[in-house]
Length: 373
Image (tube, rainbow, N blue to C red; front, side):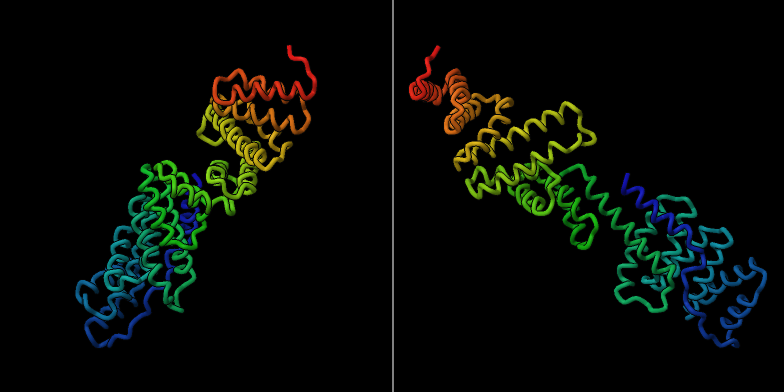
């Protein structure tokens, strides 16, 4: 929707430019005593508009290689456009581009004519052509180029960029999406879509199952963008699993939690899926914060994070681990009742921590002289 509205705005700007605003070739100096000179002077002196067009149209038929050919075709392009014979105007512009493939004014005029013809296909063709010619012509711009032509060139380049971007981001296959986006960035290094492209590439690599590239894209993204909890969690998990930079794990996980608590349901996602994804993300983030804090003996932080993660841990191994850690953190915080509660719950989960938790319960109750029921 956004891309379509921007393209419509470009076409609207194009539509308000006058047909004669493109500043075509200057009138050549022809010997008025030669046949071509006489015909040109007669055509230009004719005050009857249809007769003038008829004489001008005759000129390239009789003198196709005349140095005045581009001037005549330019006059015909404008004349036919003003007369409303738009197909002939479009052909005249095409002939101008045969003579000079870098004639930006002719291409811009044809873009306007195609839009007036209300042909989406022709408009797209001439928009693309005007943009391509603009890329070449504006490398060494003609100082006499009209304001209308310069404005058209900017609009055509912008429209071409938007169309190429739209094609890339809407490609269904992630491999095609990645390839087209990489090509787009090379062609448009200063694009205004750079931020969105980073996100799209990250999602495409993840969809493709390329973990390494998805992680690299996520690293690049989170360096300046805190709005993607999935990227924040992916990078945090990478550091967490590698045992590197514990502080960064906590920082990224906290940013992800903050983002998920504030974010609204993404468009196109069901409320059920959003709730499930949000719960899973919050649980993962809190688990990582709890683990890092526990290792660093930051007992209060570990207790808070693990308590937040615990209700949604369904895997018995992880649940037993967190219960065991919560028991010890609360023991160190002298929250004896909670410590015993967590350890007792851990003893109810079959596994390697079951017996250890039971022994710790006995140790705590003995230390604090608590009678077990």
